[in-house]
Length: 117
Length: 110
Image (cartoon, rainbow over all chains, first blue to last red; front, side):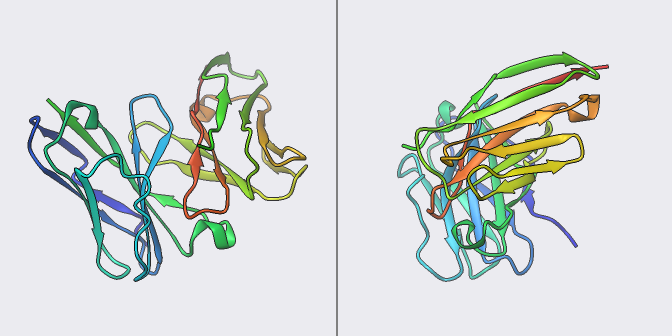
């Protein structure tokens, strides 16, 4: 009965370096979401995966951000040439079905705290 | 852009007091959810409201969805230190994702 897990829990990197964040959703959850949470603020939607459909990338802030998901399993969020404004907690969530269909609960991981020096 | 404004942004109260947190938008949402987030953790769902005017109770927490489905409130009776956290409202406008509010950071002092 594991929940959503994310790794690493903390990542400190230098400006200009690439980082890769990992999310393991709850088994059987078809939908997976990535959010960004800046210090003291709410959640900002980044990208959404639903099964094998094309992902909804409408929230990605720039072309430095990309994400992949293989089937209904692990997802990775990659940030290239990191900038200081990328510093935030990156949260992953999964749900049984898309939010719009049945108001399904999103289960969140603990997040990865990214610090760009 | 469908913004969800929450007020107050910060709230510090004594144990045993009552409080209300508001979530307002100019947009209509098909459903609205309330989450609580504790430091170092992801948000955890408290409730989903779907029908305009709906009221849901969860122990000492009362949630209301506005008649026009544009706003919601969370009322806590006799707050306890365990209620401390960041309260987030999130609306589903029918798209794939949730739009999250700006958050209310609640501190309950013993």
